[in-house]
Picture (spheres, rainbow, N blue to C red):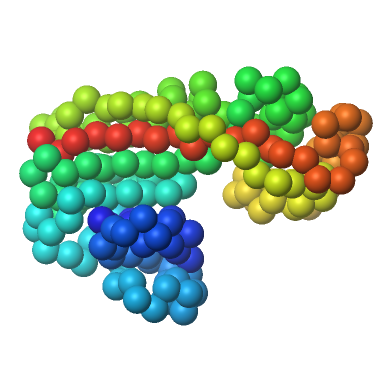
Length: 216
């Protein structure tokens, strides 16, 4: 398996734990250094989705954890198809907030789209990712029809830790400082007002959304 856009290796470690033979590819030097430190047994290479340092048809599956939306699929699609063996799988995975739960839906509303974006909740994720595997230049499709599925889980959180995580999202980081403070204050006030989140630890209902396509 190829973990593409592997970051510091969170998905890589899971793949290793289930017995997969994994190659990790990551463009950011600092993240690659951390991945190599934490998973010295994994072959970890500098590279990107648009330029994968592997031979043709050399992997059975390509996985991208919270990364595929950063790929330039006009270039990355053919490159991923190149390294996949015939019939191999491309799968993108995203962590989603389960806004079918009422208080999570409320949090998404008051946070605003910069903090909780279209790929962060199930309905938006399905719409945003359904055609992500398709060529954008009129070229021939290299992958079959997509399958989408969601798998429930949860994260133990406190109001402070959840607000701190939201503060690290790209849309929040690029806000002007005053707007960022107002947004995070609104989020903290909401969490303090809800019985589910106001006192101590709670479980944030999550889904992992998976887009899967097969190489033709």
